[in-house]
Image 1 (tube, rainbow, N blue to C red):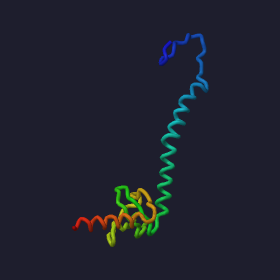
Image 2 (image 1 turned 135 degrees about the vertical axis):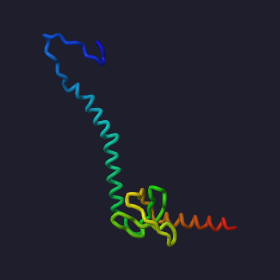
Image 3 (image 1 turned 90 degrees about the vertical axis):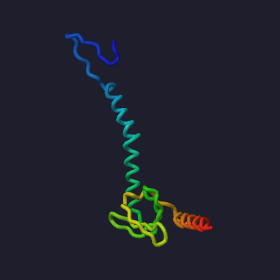
Length: 121
């Protein structure tokens, strides 16, 4: 009679067991959540871990705070970044967000140097 509340069963009738039809909808929901949320997150986590393991001296990176730099030293927990000529900062390994293509650091450095020269006049 009602969609949410099952009808009362007479005392003499055996109770019916929900078969595979009753388990199909909850299993479909679990599969949906796995493929939409859990699997992509674990895949992204594995990619981030492999990227951090591949860091070496000279790699150009961007931190999660948006700082562009070139890796000067790699430690177990920290990375020393050169953010300008002879200016270094240390960041934690997990703060590295992306690896940049070769030449990005030099191109941005030249562009900012040209802007600084233009502002002097």
